[in-house]
Length: 416
Image (cartoon, rainbow, N blue to C red; front, side, top):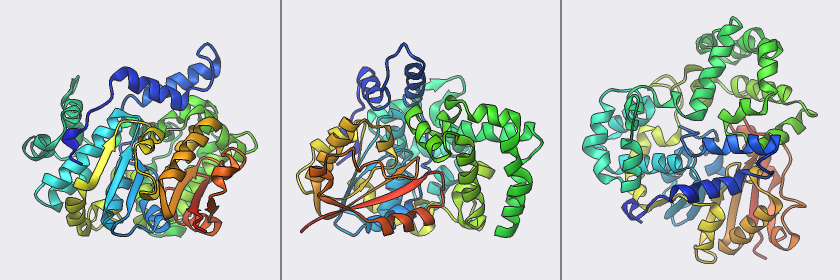
C-alpha cells in the first residue's frame, strides 16, 4: 500500500464531505452559520496531535499481530502508536486534507529518517532548525505528490514544513486554542507555566484550586466559554457543544472545569503528556516525563517496519469501509466522529462496520457527553449484533489521561 499511489480529493469534494459531516441546519440560520464556520477549520490543520490516549485504545482493542484495523486519522499519533503492537495493516481516514498530509509525513519519516533521535527531533521537539534539512534530504523524496505539495506550499513565513522548525504544536486550531487559553489566563493574572513546578499530585491540586479553578469565575472566561465558537479550537462542533452542555444541565462551564480538573489533577504530571503539552505547549524532553507511545525510543523499529502497512485516505469512514472486504477487520477506532452524525449517518456507518467486522472484532469510540449515543439511534437489527462492554468502557475512561471526553465506549461483536 505505497502512499505514492494515493491522491488527495479535489477541493470541491473535500468541501462536500466535510459539509455532510457537520452541516445539519440551513445556511441562513444562526446554527447554520456556526456549522459552516466550524467546517471551514477542517480545510486546514485542526489537530497537530490527537487528544485521545492511545494507550487506552490499545488496551481496549487488544491489538495482535495479524489484526487489521481502521481508524480516524486525526493528528496521526493514534495510528503511529498502534504500530507498536505490530498489526498486519491499518486503514486510516480523515476528511481534512491537512490531517492526511500530516499522517503521511509521519509514516514517510518513520521509513526514511536514520534513527530515533532524528525522528524525535522532528515530531517530539518539533522546533529544531535542522528539521527542514531532514525533510528535504530524507522525507520529501518518499512523500506522495499531494502531501508534498501541501508541506511545500508557501505562505508569509516560507514553506509550510517550516512549522517543524518553530514549534509545530503551537500551530493548528488546537495549538492556537491552547495558546489563547494561556493568554486569557495571563490577562487575569495567572501564569499557567507555574504548574510545571508541581512535584506531586498534591501540589498539582493545590495549584489548580488556587490558580486555575478561579479562572472559571472570571467574567471574561465565563463570557468566552459560553460562546459556542469559543470551543471550535478543540474541534468541538455545535452539535457536540450541545452534548457537553447537557452534562452540565445546559451550562458548559462546569463541565469544562471538571474535565480540566481531571486532566491536571487525576494523573501525575510526569506521567501525563497531555497535561504537560497543555501547560508547556510541547512534549516532555527525554527524562522530563512520559511520551506518546510512538515517540518512545523502543518504538522506532516497529514504526519503521510497520509504516508500509498503513494506508491513509482523504475520504469518509463509511465510504472507505464500503470498499473493504466482508469480515476483514478486527478493530475500529472511531474517536468522537459519531457525535457529529445524524441518525441516518450512524446507521449507514454501523451497517458497514458490521459487514466488515471479523469474528471477535472490537469498536471503540468517545463521546463529548457521558451517555452512549448509539442505543435508540442505530437500528436494533444492526446494533443487536454487538455487545456493549460497559466494564471495559469504564476502565478505559478512568485511565484516559487526555480527560477531555465525557465517555469512552467499547463494543464487541457477538459471534454466537
